[in-house]
Image 1 (cartoon, one colour):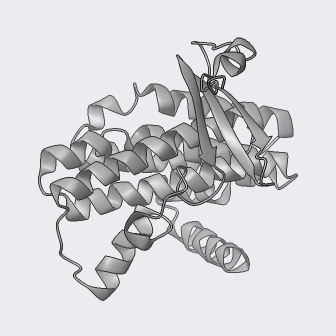
Image 2 (image 1 turned 45 degrees about the horizontal axis):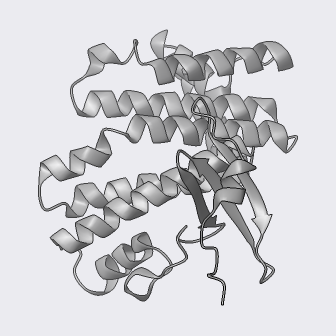
Length: 248
């Protein structure tokens, strides 16, 4: 009886690895569901399109983050991760990173922003429940990168879906502010202006302004009014922003 071929030679031969950029695709599984695949050096990663990328249910929940939220609400808000749970957190970070960059490469920006939001929430959980600061910072140091990917994905999603271009600019501005908050929190303000991710968001923002002839957003007008100490105008703009947020 011939031995069953368990290698993936045919897949690798037909899908060349590019070390300069992610290479992803969505394929139909024989059972009818879609899965996303990412070509990596020496192989291929296959991931589910929703919930945990590896398709498992950690501690019986769709994702580890869901388990964390359940534990906070139903068991103990002040708990600390065990060493085993820290490893599970690390795994979920890695899995969501690979799927996130796959969605970006595939221009599935709504899915990319969803996965980035999940990762940022998991980072918050690390800060709240880390057994030591050093372990938490292993993930926290990547927050600007995830914020950048989320803001860029949300902005491109707005454009892709035919939304208001000004909303895309607002998403980028919010991302820039969140990265500024990160630097302020860790007393690294001097590094903010030189941050490459911030510069890239500014470039995309200004390109959108030029392409769609976008003037200053309400948030930008508010910041300018406060800087000029025009508090009457600032109050009017804040009211307009509140009304806009309620409509959304």
